[in-house]
Image 1: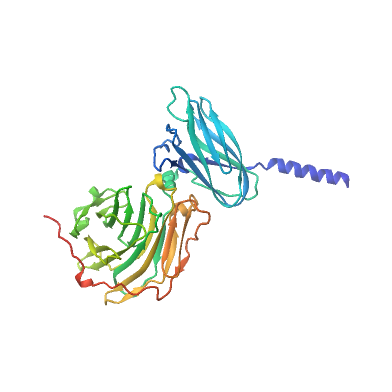
Image 2: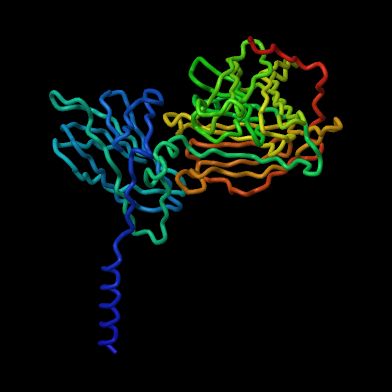
Length: 435
Protein backbone atom coordinates (compact mmCIF):
# COMPACT_ATOMS: atom_id res chain seq x y z
CA UNK A 1 0.00 0.00 0.00
CA UNK A 2 2.83 2.36 0.89
CA UNK A 3 4.59 1.63 -2.40
CA UNK A 4 1.41 2.42 -4.32
CA UNK A 5 1.06 5.77 -2.50
CA UNK A 6 4.70 6.66 -3.18
CA UNK A 7 4.26 5.77 -6.87
CA UNK A 8 1.11 7.92 -7.01
CA UNK A 9 2.89 10.90 -5.45
CA UNK A 10 5.86 10.55 -7.81
CA UNK A 11 3.56 10.42 -10.83
CA UNK A 12 1.69 13.54 -9.64
CA UNK A 13 4.96 15.38 -8.95
CA UNK A 14 6.44 14.47 -12.31
CA UNK A 15 3.21 15.31 -14.13
CA UNK A 16 3.06 18.70 -12.44
CA UNK A 17 6.68 19.43 -13.26
CA UNK A 18 5.95 18.83 -16.94
CA UNK A 19 3.13 21.40 -16.98
CA UNK A 20 4.76 24.83 -17.19
CA UNK A 21 2.85 28.02 -16.58
CA UNK A 22 0.95 29.34 -19.58
CA UNK A 23 2.85 32.13 -21.33
CA UNK A 24 1.77 35.00 -23.56
CA UNK A 25 4.05 37.27 -25.58
CA UNK A 26 2.37 40.65 -25.96
CA UNK A 27 3.77 42.88 -28.73
CA UNK A 28 3.77 46.44 -27.44
CA UNK A 29 3.43 47.97 -30.91
CA UNK A 30 -0.17 46.76 -31.18
CA UNK A 31 -1.28 47.29 -27.58
CA UNK A 32 0.26 50.60 -26.47
CA UNK A 33 -0.84 54.25 -26.63
CA UNK A 34 0.57 57.54 -25.42
CA UNK A 35 -1.68 58.57 -22.54
CA UNK A 36 0.24 61.66 -21.28
CA UNK A 37 0.61 64.55 -21.75
CA UNK A 38 -2.03 64.03 -24.49
CA UNK A 39 -2.94 61.27 -26.94
CA UNK A 40 -1.09 60.81 -30.19
CA UNK A 41 2.68 60.99 -30.37
CA UNK A 42 5.05 58.92 -32.47
CA UNK A 43 6.46 56.60 -29.82
CA UNK A 44 4.78 53.52 -31.31
CA UNK A 45 7.10 52.81 -34.21
CA UNK A 46 6.48 51.01 -37.47
CA UNK A 47 9.40 48.75 -36.72
CA UNK A 48 7.40 47.16 -33.92
CA UNK A 49 8.86 48.84 -30.85
CA UNK A 50 7.84 51.59 -28.44
CA UNK A 51 10.49 54.29 -28.06
CA UNK A 52 10.29 57.92 -26.95
CA UNK A 53 12.48 60.73 -25.68
CA UNK A 54 10.23 63.17 -23.77
CA UNK A 55 10.33 62.89 -19.97
CA UNK A 56 6.69 64.03 -19.71
CA UNK A 57 5.44 61.24 -21.99
CA UNK A 58 3.65 58.18 -20.64
CA UNK A 59 3.00 55.11 -22.77
CA UNK A 60 0.39 52.64 -21.56
CA UNK A 61 -0.22 49.03 -22.54
CA UNK A 62 -3.65 47.41 -22.08
CA UNK A 63 -4.34 43.66 -21.80
CA UNK A 64 -7.52 41.82 -20.85
CA UNK A 65 -7.72 38.88 -18.44
CA UNK A 66 -10.90 36.82 -18.35
CA UNK A 67 -10.64 36.10 -14.60
CA UNK A 68 -8.68 37.08 -11.46
CA UNK A 69 -5.14 35.72 -11.56
CA UNK A 70 -1.57 36.34 -10.41
CA UNK A 71 0.67 37.14 -13.38
CA UNK A 72 4.44 37.14 -13.69
CA UNK A 73 5.75 39.91 -15.96
CA UNK A 74 8.91 40.34 -17.99
CA UNK A 75 9.81 43.23 -20.30
CA UNK A 76 11.90 42.69 -23.42
CA UNK A 77 14.00 45.69 -24.50
CA UNK A 78 16.19 45.86 -27.60
CA UNK A 79 18.83 48.32 -28.78
CA UNK A 80 19.06 49.98 -25.40
CA UNK A 81 21.33 53.00 -24.92
CA UNK A 82 20.95 52.81 -21.18
CA UNK A 83 18.20 54.66 -19.33
CA UNK A 84 15.92 54.49 -16.31
CA UNK A 85 12.17 53.96 -16.46
CA UNK A 86 9.34 54.32 -13.98
CA UNK A 87 6.77 51.58 -14.36
CA UNK A 88 3.32 51.85 -12.84
CA UNK A 89 1.38 48.63 -12.35
CA UNK A 90 -1.98 48.24 -10.61
CA UNK A 91 -1.27 48.93 -6.94
CA UNK A 92 2.43 49.76 -7.16
CA UNK A 93 5.26 51.58 -8.93
CA UNK A 94 8.84 50.57 -9.55
CA UNK A 95 11.93 51.96 -11.20
CA UNK A 96 13.79 49.96 -13.80
CA UNK A 97 17.36 50.67 -14.89
CA UNK A 98 18.13 49.68 -18.47
CA UNK A 99 21.67 48.81 -19.46
CA UNK A 100 23.08 49.50 -22.91
CA UNK A 101 22.81 46.45 -25.12
CA UNK A 102 20.46 44.34 -27.19
CA UNK A 103 17.63 41.99 -26.30
CA UNK A 104 17.51 42.49 -22.56
CA UNK A 105 14.85 40.69 -20.52
CA UNK A 106 13.84 42.45 -17.29
CA UNK A 107 11.72 40.80 -14.60
CA UNK A 108 8.97 43.12 -13.37
CA UNK A 109 7.64 40.80 -10.68
CA UNK A 110 4.07 39.83 -10.03
CA UNK A 111 0.86 41.61 -10.96
CA UNK A 112 -2.32 40.49 -9.23
CA UNK A 113 -5.39 40.84 -11.44
CA UNK A 114 -8.29 41.16 -9.01
CA UNK A 115 -11.21 40.98 -11.46
CA UNK A 116 -11.95 40.13 -15.06
CA UNK A 117 -11.31 42.95 -17.50
CA UNK A 118 -8.47 45.09 -18.79
CA UNK A 119 -5.40 45.96 -16.76
CA UNK A 120 -2.96 48.75 -17.60
CA UNK A 121 0.80 49.18 -17.26
CA UNK A 122 2.38 52.63 -17.67
CA UNK A 123 5.93 53.42 -18.78
CA UNK A 124 7.62 56.78 -18.20
CA UNK A 125 11.24 57.72 -18.83
CA UNK A 126 13.12 59.15 -15.86
CA UNK A 127 16.68 59.53 -17.08
CA UNK A 128 18.72 58.87 -20.21
CA UNK A 129 22.43 58.20 -20.25
CA UNK A 130 24.72 61.01 -21.36
CA UNK A 131 24.22 61.41 -25.10
CA UNK A 132 21.23 59.07 -25.11
CA UNK A 133 18.44 59.82 -27.58
CA UNK A 134 15.61 57.69 -26.21
CA UNK A 135 14.34 55.67 -23.25
CA UNK A 136 15.13 52.27 -24.73
CA UNK A 137 13.24 50.38 -27.41
CA UNK A 138 10.53 48.37 -25.71
CA UNK A 139 9.53 45.28 -27.68
CA UNK A 140 7.11 43.09 -25.76
CA UNK A 141 5.77 41.92 -22.45
CA UNK A 142 6.09 38.27 -21.53
CA UNK A 143 3.26 37.28 -19.20
CA UNK A 144 2.99 33.91 -17.49
CA UNK A 145 0.52 32.42 -15.03
CA UNK A 146 -0.33 29.01 -13.60
CA UNK A 147 -4.02 29.94 -13.21
CA UNK A 148 -6.00 27.13 -14.91
CA UNK A 149 -7.78 28.05 -18.16
CA UNK A 150 -6.78 31.70 -17.96
CA UNK A 151 -7.31 33.65 -21.21
CA UNK A 152 -5.57 36.90 -22.08
CA UNK A 153 -6.91 38.98 -24.96
CA UNK A 154 -4.75 41.48 -26.86
CA UNK A 155 -3.55 42.28 -30.38
CA UNK A 156 -1.45 39.19 -31.00
CA UNK A 157 0.45 40.03 -34.20
CA UNK A 158 0.57 42.34 -37.19
CA UNK A 159 -1.05 39.95 -39.66
CA UNK A 160 -3.22 42.00 -42.01
CA UNK A 161 -1.91 45.23 -40.46
CA UNK A 162 -3.59 44.40 -37.14
CA UNK A 163 -1.25 46.63 -35.12
CA UNK A 164 -2.87 49.56 -36.94
CA UNK A 165 -6.43 48.21 -36.83
CA UNK A 166 -6.10 47.02 -33.25
CA UNK A 167 -4.87 50.41 -32.05
CA UNK A 168 -7.80 52.07 -33.84
CA UNK A 169 -10.17 49.83 -31.90
CA UNK A 170 -13.25 47.79 -32.81
CA UNK A 171 -15.94 49.27 -35.04
CA UNK A 172 -19.54 48.51 -34.05
CA UNK A 173 -22.68 48.50 -36.19
CA UNK A 174 -26.47 48.52 -36.02
CA UNK A 175 -28.39 47.06 -38.95
CA UNK A 176 -31.98 48.27 -38.74
CA UNK A 177 -34.98 46.07 -39.39
CA UNK A 178 -37.08 47.75 -42.08
CA UNK A 179 -39.81 46.52 -44.47
CA UNK A 180 -38.40 44.20 -47.10
CA UNK A 181 -41.42 44.04 -49.37
CA UNK A 182 -41.57 47.78 -50.11
CA UNK A 183 -39.47 50.16 -52.20
CA UNK A 184 -37.86 52.51 -49.68
CA UNK A 185 -36.99 56.04 -50.74
CA UNK A 186 -35.86 57.85 -47.56
CA UNK A 187 -33.89 56.88 -44.47
CA UNK A 188 -33.95 59.06 -41.34
CA UNK A 189 -31.82 58.90 -38.17
CA UNK A 190 -30.96 61.18 -35.25
CA UNK A 191 -27.62 61.10 -33.40
CA UNK A 192 -26.87 62.42 -29.92
CA UNK A 193 -23.28 62.17 -28.70
CA UNK A 194 -23.13 62.46 -24.89
CA UNK A 195 -20.80 65.10 -23.48
CA UNK A 196 -17.31 63.72 -23.00
CA UNK A 197 -17.87 60.95 -25.57
CA UNK A 198 -16.50 62.83 -28.58
CA UNK A 199 -12.74 62.19 -28.73
CA UNK A 200 -10.71 63.06 -31.78
CA UNK A 201 -10.71 60.46 -34.52
CA UNK A 202 -14.35 59.36 -34.21
CA UNK A 203 -16.89 58.78 -36.99
CA UNK A 204 -20.55 58.65 -35.92
CA UNK A 205 -22.20 57.19 -39.01
CA UNK A 206 -25.93 57.79 -38.97
CA UNK A 207 -27.23 56.73 -42.37
CA UNK A 208 -25.47 53.87 -44.09
CA UNK A 209 -26.87 52.28 -47.23
CA UNK A 210 -25.74 49.70 -49.74
CA UNK A 211 -23.61 52.11 -51.78
CA UNK A 212 -22.35 54.67 -49.25
CA UNK A 213 -22.56 56.37 -45.87
CA UNK A 214 -23.50 59.64 -44.16
CA UNK A 215 -22.49 60.86 -40.69
CA UNK A 216 -20.32 63.22 -38.67
CA UNK A 217 -16.72 63.18 -37.48
CA UNK A 218 -14.25 64.68 -35.01
CA UNK A 219 -11.18 65.37 -37.15
CA UNK A 220 -9.03 67.54 -34.88
CA UNK A 221 -9.29 69.65 -31.72
CA UNK A 222 -10.60 72.50 -33.88
CA UNK A 223 -12.40 70.80 -36.78
CA UNK A 224 -15.57 68.72 -37.04
CA UNK A 225 -17.21 67.51 -40.21
CA UNK A 226 -20.37 66.18 -41.76
CA UNK A 227 -19.44 63.57 -44.36
CA UNK A 228 -21.47 62.04 -47.20
CA UNK A 229 -19.88 59.54 -49.59
CA UNK A 230 -21.02 57.24 -52.40
CA UNK A 231 -18.85 54.40 -53.73
CA UNK A 232 -18.22 53.95 -57.43
CA UNK A 233 -19.41 50.62 -58.87
CA UNK A 234 -15.82 50.14 -60.11
CA UNK A 235 -13.78 48.28 -57.48
CA UNK A 236 -10.50 50.09 -56.72
CA UNK A 237 -8.81 51.92 -53.87
CA UNK A 238 -7.43 54.55 -56.25
CA UNK A 239 -10.07 56.98 -57.59
CA UNK A 240 -7.85 57.86 -60.57
CA UNK A 241 -8.30 54.31 -61.86
CA UNK A 242 -12.09 54.64 -62.19
CA UNK A 243 -13.26 54.67 -65.83
CA UNK A 244 -15.11 57.80 -66.83
CA UNK A 245 -18.43 55.98 -67.29
CA UNK A 246 -18.27 54.60 -63.71
CA UNK A 247 -17.41 57.80 -61.86
CA UNK A 248 -19.76 59.29 -59.28
CA UNK A 249 -21.29 62.47 -60.71
CA UNK A 250 -22.07 65.53 -58.60
CA UNK A 251 -25.55 66.94 -59.33
CA UNK A 252 -25.78 69.55 -56.55
CA UNK A 253 -24.10 70.61 -53.31
CA UNK A 254 -25.03 72.77 -50.35
CA UNK A 255 -23.50 76.02 -49.20
CA UNK A 256 -19.99 75.59 -47.82
CA UNK A 257 -19.75 71.93 -48.88
CA UNK A 258 -16.50 70.69 -50.43
CA UNK A 259 -16.82 67.92 -53.00
CA UNK A 260 -14.11 65.60 -54.24
CA UNK A 261 -13.05 61.96 -54.43
CA UNK A 262 -11.89 59.44 -51.86
CA UNK A 263 -9.92 56.20 -51.93
CA UNK A 264 -8.21 53.52 -49.81
CA UNK A 265 -11.54 51.90 -48.83
CA UNK A 266 -13.00 51.54 -52.25
CA UNK A 267 -13.32 54.81 -54.16
CA UNK A 268 -16.00 57.25 -55.15
CA UNK A 269 -17.46 60.69 -54.60
CA UNK A 270 -17.25 62.47 -51.27
CA UNK A 271 -18.74 65.66 -49.84
CA UNK A 272 -17.59 67.41 -46.67
CA UNK A 273 -19.17 70.19 -44.63
CA UNK A 274 -16.95 71.72 -41.93
CA UNK A 275 -19.52 72.15 -39.16
CA UNK A 276 -19.03 72.74 -35.40
CA UNK A 277 -21.49 70.15 -34.11
CA UNK A 278 -21.53 69.77 -30.32
CA UNK A 279 -21.80 66.90 -27.88
CA UNK A 280 -25.07 66.93 -26.00
CA UNK A 281 -27.11 68.19 -28.98
CA UNK A 282 -29.20 66.08 -31.35
CA UNK A 283 -28.55 66.15 -35.09
CA UNK A 284 -30.71 64.64 -37.79
CA UNK A 285 -29.77 62.95 -41.04
CA UNK A 286 -32.00 62.30 -44.05
CA UNK A 287 -30.95 60.25 -47.07
CA UNK A 288 -32.89 59.79 -50.32
CA UNK A 289 -32.18 57.02 -52.83
CA UNK A 290 -34.08 57.16 -56.15
CA UNK A 291 -33.42 55.14 -59.32
CA UNK A 292 -33.65 57.20 -62.51
CA UNK A 293 -34.84 54.22 -64.56
CA UNK A 294 -31.97 54.29 -67.07
CA UNK A 295 -29.29 52.46 -65.08
CA UNK A 296 -28.41 55.41 -62.83
CA UNK A 297 -29.47 56.16 -59.24
CA UNK A 298 -29.50 59.45 -57.36
CA UNK A 299 -28.36 59.76 -53.72
CA UNK A 300 -29.16 62.90 -51.73
CA UNK A 301 -28.22 63.78 -48.14
CA UNK A 302 -29.61 66.50 -45.85
CA UNK A 303 -28.37 67.38 -42.36
CA UNK A 304 -29.57 69.64 -39.56
CA UNK A 305 -29.61 70.60 -35.90
CA UNK A 306 -32.86 69.24 -34.50
CA UNK A 307 -33.26 72.01 -31.93
CA UNK A 308 -32.98 74.68 -34.61
CA UNK A 309 -35.34 72.75 -36.92
CA UNK A 310 -32.94 73.29 -39.80
CA UNK A 311 -32.21 71.31 -42.94
CA UNK A 312 -29.25 71.91 -45.21
CA UNK A 313 -28.30 70.00 -48.31
CA UNK A 314 -24.95 68.27 -48.21
CA UNK A 315 -24.88 66.85 -51.74
CA UNK A 316 -26.71 65.00 -54.48
CA UNK A 317 -24.76 62.38 -56.42
CA UNK A 318 -25.56 60.17 -59.41
CA UNK A 319 -24.18 56.62 -59.41
CA UNK A 320 -23.90 54.86 -62.78
CA UNK A 321 -24.63 51.19 -63.44
CA UNK A 322 -27.06 51.19 -60.49
CA UNK A 323 -30.81 50.70 -60.29
CA UNK A 324 -31.93 50.57 -56.67
CA UNK A 325 -33.91 52.13 -53.85
CA UNK A 326 -32.65 52.41 -50.26
CA UNK A 327 -31.12 49.10 -49.11
CA UNK A 328 -29.19 47.86 -46.05
CA UNK A 329 -30.02 50.82 -43.82
CA UNK A 330 -27.55 50.89 -40.90
CA UNK A 331 -25.42 52.97 -38.53
CA UNK A 332 -21.96 52.48 -37.07
CA UNK A 333 -19.44 53.93 -34.62
CA UNK A 334 -15.78 53.96 -35.61
CA UNK A 335 -12.44 55.13 -34.25
CA UNK A 336 -10.32 56.05 -37.28
CA UNK A 337 -7.18 57.47 -35.62
CA UNK A 338 -4.99 54.79 -33.95
CA UNK A 339 -3.43 57.36 -31.61
CA UNK A 340 -6.85 57.87 -29.97
CA UNK A 341 -8.06 54.27 -30.02
CA UNK A 342 -7.70 53.85 -26.27
CA UNK A 343 -10.30 56.56 -25.51
CA UNK A 344 -13.93 55.57 -25.13
CA UNK A 345 -16.76 56.96 -27.23
CA UNK A 346 -20.52 56.44 -27.30
CA UNK A 347 -23.54 57.63 -29.30
CA UNK A 348 -27.34 57.36 -29.21
CA UNK A 349 -29.28 56.64 -32.41
CA UNK A 350 -32.93 57.62 -32.28
CA UNK A 351 -36.04 58.19 -34.38
CA UNK A 352 -34.84 55.67 -36.96
CA UNK A 353 -37.34 55.47 -39.80
CA UNK A 354 -37.65 54.75 -43.49
CA UNK A 355 -40.21 56.14 -45.92
CA UNK A 356 -41.51 54.09 -48.83
CA UNK A 357 -42.31 55.39 -52.29
CA UNK A 358 -45.97 55.92 -51.35
CA UNK A 359 -44.95 58.43 -48.66
CA UNK A 360 -45.57 56.20 -45.61
CA UNK A 361 -43.04 56.30 -42.77
CA UNK A 362 -42.06 53.09 -40.93
CA UNK A 363 -40.38 53.09 -37.51
CA UNK A 364 -37.50 50.66 -37.07
CA UNK A 365 -38.15 48.97 -33.73
CA UNK A 366 -35.22 46.53 -33.84
CA UNK A 367 -31.55 46.57 -34.83
CA UNK A 368 -28.96 43.80 -35.06
CA UNK A 369 -25.61 44.47 -33.37
CA UNK A 370 -22.32 43.45 -35.03
CA UNK A 371 -18.60 44.18 -34.69
CA UNK A 372 -15.72 44.15 -37.17
CA UNK A 373 -12.79 41.70 -37.34
CA UNK A 374 -10.88 43.58 -34.63
CA UNK A 375 -13.58 42.62 -32.14
CA UNK A 376 -14.63 39.38 -33.79
CA UNK A 377 -11.04 38.13 -33.68
CA UNK A 378 -10.76 39.04 -29.96
CA UNK A 379 -7.96 41.52 -30.60
CA UNK A 380 -10.07 44.10 -28.72
CA UNK A 381 -13.10 43.36 -26.57
CA UNK A 382 -14.10 46.90 -25.57
CA UNK A 383 -17.27 47.09 -27.64
CA UNK A 384 -20.98 46.97 -26.88
CA UNK A 385 -24.40 48.26 -27.88
CA UNK A 386 -28.00 48.19 -26.74
CA UNK A 387 -31.14 50.24 -26.28
CA UNK A 388 -33.00 52.03 -23.50
CA UNK A 389 -36.40 51.25 -24.95
CA UNK A 390 -36.55 54.50 -26.91
CA UNK A 391 -33.17 54.77 -28.63
CA UNK A 392 -30.32 52.48 -29.64
CA UNK A 393 -26.73 53.07 -28.61
CA UNK A 394 -23.23 52.01 -29.63
CA UNK A 395 -20.05 52.17 -27.56
CA UNK A 396 -16.45 51.26 -28.30
CA UNK A 397 -12.87 51.69 -27.06
CA UNK A 398 -11.95 52.81 -23.54
CA UNK A 399 -11.14 49.26 -22.31
CA UNK A 400 -14.30 48.69 -20.29
CA UNK A 401 -14.70 45.27 -18.74
CA UNK A 402 -17.70 43.54 -20.33
CA UNK A 403 -18.09 43.27 -24.12
CA UNK A 404 -21.38 43.09 -25.94
CA UNK A 405 -22.55 40.03 -27.84
CA UNK A 406 -22.35 40.27 -31.64
CA UNK A 407 -25.50 39.06 -33.33
CA UNK A 408 -27.78 40.37 -30.58
CA UNK A 409 -30.95 42.14 -31.70
CA UNK A 410 -32.00 45.18 -29.68
CA UNK A 411 -35.58 46.44 -29.54
CA UNK A 412 -37.32 49.73 -28.78
CA UNK A 413 -40.96 50.59 -28.14
CA UNK A 414 -43.27 50.72 -31.12
CA UNK A 415 -44.34 54.24 -30.08
CA UNK A 416 -40.82 55.45 -29.28
CA UNK A 417 -41.19 58.63 -31.34
CA UNK A 418 -43.58 60.38 -33.69
CA UNK A 419 -42.78 60.34 -37.41
CA UNK A 420 -40.43 63.18 -38.40
CA UNK A 421 -42.21 66.30 -39.58
CA UNK A 422 -40.38 66.94 -42.83
CA UNK A 423 -41.68 68.91 -45.77
CA UNK A 424 -40.07 66.65 -48.34
CA UNK A 425 -41.19 68.84 -51.23
CA UNK A 426 -39.44 71.95 -49.94
CA UNK A 427 -36.08 70.66 -48.73
CA UNK A 428 -33.12 72.75 -49.94
CA UNK A 429 -31.89 71.62 -53.35
CA UNK A 430 -28.46 73.29 -53.39
CA UNK A 431 -26.46 74.52 -56.33
CA UNK A 432 -25.43 72.58 -59.45
CA UNK A 433 -21.70 72.13 -60.00
CA UNK A 434 -19.81 74.81 -61.86
CA UNK A 435 -19.04 73.97 -65.49
